[in-house]
Length: 210
Image (tube, rainbow, N blue to C red; front, side, top):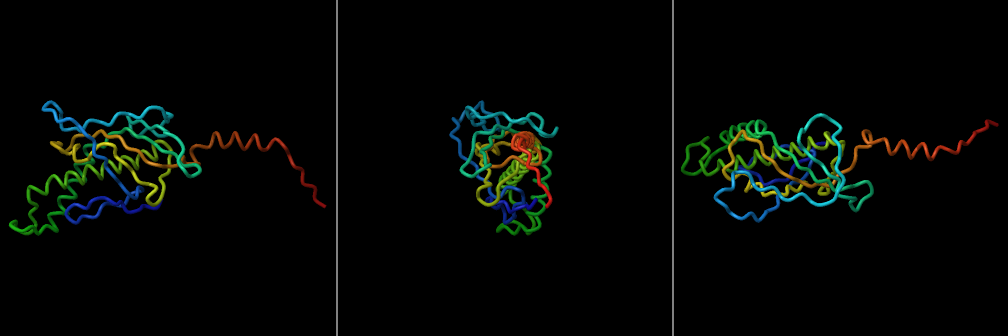
């Protein structure tokens, strides 16, 4: 498993953690502003069609994954994921990030090591983003998939992370949906391959030693 660098906006000069996904993008969604809307961003509607996948592990309870069809390259498919990033993990990443930021912080008008209030939402946003990526990584194992290398392995979160973070209470779970291109792990999804191999081996070729 080579972990590759994640390309995300860097908050306070903090490097993103290395993950199996190389890049990350978050799409802006147009959500009507309403006083009744809670801190969570409205989830983007589920795409129609696709084939529902069954998990191969007991992790990621409540998540869903659909195969939305083949990509341009052989064996590559587009996957749609609906999942929840664990609030405890977000809190943990945020605490670590804030400590790191304090260590490096040198903001004009603030004493060395003090993180100003206006930087706090950025730290929260970074933690939420990291937790979402980690959840996408866990989905690979949960559904027996492999990520692609390079820009082909980009994860697109269908909700706007900024919207998710508005009024976000640290420690609460974050629901999101994402899409990414990937492959089925051949070591796990072997049934159809085995059946095909059996069909091919109907003709026995006898080798006679001379």
